[in-house]
Image (cartoon, rainbow, N blue to C red):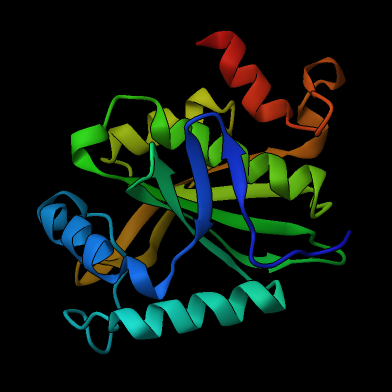
Length: 204
């Protein structure tokens, strides 16, 4: 399947696009407003648990990974304003043909269905455009909001992983969820192949 970058995915008023240099002020303000909201769930570097990469480095890394097709890191834009982020990576082709999903949304917009829509849009891109077989996500057991997102997308709970990811300064346990392309019924796929998003629409 061809890989296109920069990637721009849309569903009505919701858009997924790369982080841009001119997003600096809005993005940093969004992260600062949500600092306490995101702290228990954000992955950290074990060697430097309190160090965050500068904005310019984020833009540069996201662009490099996007161009190479090894990962996709997109901001969620709703009605023209930044509302969160959705990521996919690492993206593995060949025998595994899989990718790991991540997402977060502005606390002020929580409960509006933004995270499920953004995640569904990204998963459909994986299956319909990238030709991947499987998408998984690892979630801390106590993160009930994130687990509800996975469940709304019909991702299966697969197992418990001890100390899987370094989060908020320590190695944390996670629960894994997954979905394969074969689990999306053919009658749900629209002309663009968006079966996960179409099922979410019908069930809402």
